[in-house]
Amino acid sequence: MDEPTPIPAGSIVPDTAESQAYVRGVVQRGEAAWPDKDGTLPRGVTHEIIGQHEASGLPILVRKRMY
Image 1 (cartoon, rainbow, N blue to C red):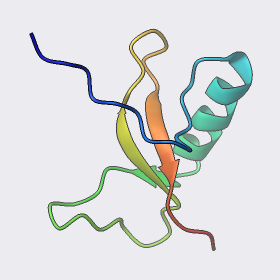
Image 2 (image 1 turned 60 degrees about the vertical axis):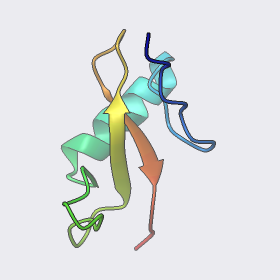
Image 3 (image 1 turned 180 degrees about the vertical axis):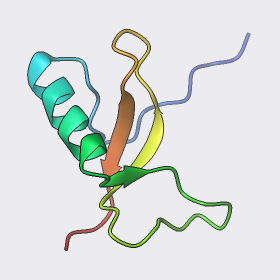
């Protein structure tokens, strides 16, 4: 049986109403994306999507840069 991948420290996990609202806002503003195959994020993206929270269906994010 495969072990679940640990979530990195500092990740934004949408497991509360507040974190779900935050994640929804980041996604709606286009500030979150999956990295490309080279591991880079598109210009203007501040958060990397690293997975999906099973209960909420929202992405799990990690802040990567600030503009």
